[in-house]
Length: 129
Image 1 (cartoon, one colour):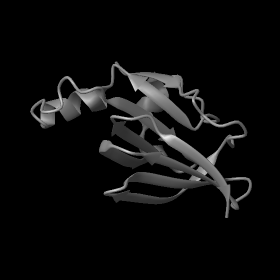
Image 2 (cartoon, helix red, strand yellow):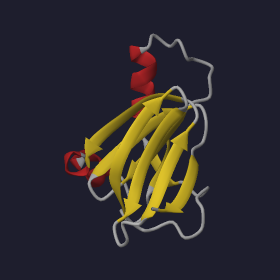
Image 3 (cartoon, one colour):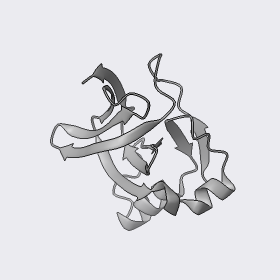
């Protein structure tokens, strides 16, 4: 079973809750941009230099996750160990990435849940719109 731990490599002052704004997957990396639910001028962007897979699901459709794991909805990002998403990724990709260190990150917003498989930790950028 997957284990969700609060990701603690976050900048100080990160809001308790964010709303999804936009996803961008390009040759430059994967960008997930959100805004503070209390002040939409406060932007929080998650940048992953190297992303192998991502999945965006409406949070209301993650009922099994909420029932079986201790997820604090006031925390935005988690790192997942013993990841079923990563195991499934390896199976579907015929293990072509076996031996590569891959991290599973889980980002919670007011309306969506984003799972990201990356070979790097995210850069988390806060800015004002």
